[in-house]
Amino acid sequence: MLYYLSQRLLESAAGTPWARHLSPLRLFGYITFRSAGAAITALLLSWWLGPRVIAWLRAKFGQEYVDIAGDTGVFQRGAKKKGTPTMGGVLIVLSLNLSTLLWTHWNSLVELTLLSVVVLTALGFYDDYAKIIHQSGRKGTKSRVKLWVQGALALFIGVYLWLAPSTRQLVTDIMVPFYKSPIVRDAIILGLVLTLLTIVGSSNAVNLTDGMDGLAIGCTLIVSFVFVVLTYLAGNSRAAGYLQIPYVPGAGELTVICAAMIGAGLGFLWFNCPPAQVFMGDTGSLPLGGLLGIIAVLIHQPLVLIIAGGVFVIEAGSVILQTGWFRYTRLRRGVGQRIFLMAPIHHHFEKKGWDESQVVMRFYILGVLCAVMALSTLKIR
Image 1 (cartoon, rainbow, N blue to C red):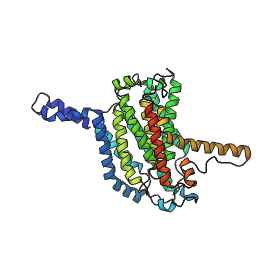
Image 2 (cartoon, rainbow, N blue to C red):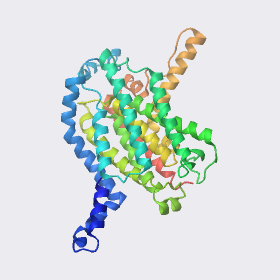
Image 3 (cartoon, one colour):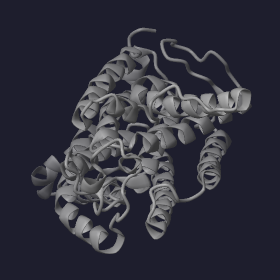
Image 4 (spheres, rainbow, N blue to C red):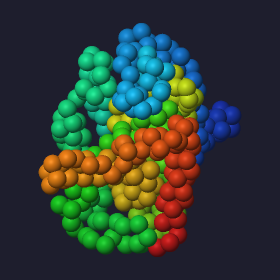
């Protein structure tokens, strides 16, 4: 909105005495300026909306059940978290979307991204609402329903990109980190499968990570910083050519979205840091994870997300391993056995005696290491 307004004013003032006075509006043409504006706007919106949204959630949707980790009896923190409102993702999505609408230059990539955020937010909100209705941290939307919705969304994105000549290569050509050229070309089926796995996997991985105060949003912020760099470079033809990474016209505007996500995430972390005043819930974790996956696909770097989001991969992997091994041993031996004390793996370390804040900070450190490794793919090719 601000971009179009500034351009209209500059065009109207061209050739008049007002042109000199309005020349600072040219700053709105720079992605870096608008990204900074989006981040600051989202942060201020989060701070302003935070108390109001939290009060509304507490009155309408207060979490009266003890969280799953607490009701096992192993951790003495269930009572502390009881009553803390969930669905805090509403605050993140509101700040993110409003800031993006103000600062971005609209194109098909931006529209596709924001549409996906709205769909996944609605899915997460419904899931959180179902849990509150049942007063249980376990009873929400059935897993297969969530997977069907996420899968349908991912498939829609993949087919949309494939049908458009300008974005077809984002799906048909497979890029691998540390390689300057696609390893496979014209592989539509493989590309659609990779798109599906990236978006669905990322959405659920962030959801599984959301189990401690500040953990999921902090790790999301770290990955978002990586994608601020990657989206800016992918949308700049000269930088992309120099670094020999895929150039995607219009991808620079995704930098504004990533910056808005950082601002909204920092604002949410203000209220989510221990002791949390609000929980993200599926309302926030599903769209944030999906957003990271979608942006990775749109800049033709889906596999880089595995490196940048290493913490999310470990969290999701621990659940898959735990579930798979338990079912296998129950089938083969009659008694299910576990690899970890509890999954996702952040609860495993909590059971081993780590304080919640220790787990969160150490996972942050691991996330930063993964981010550095992801950025190294820009030069190691």
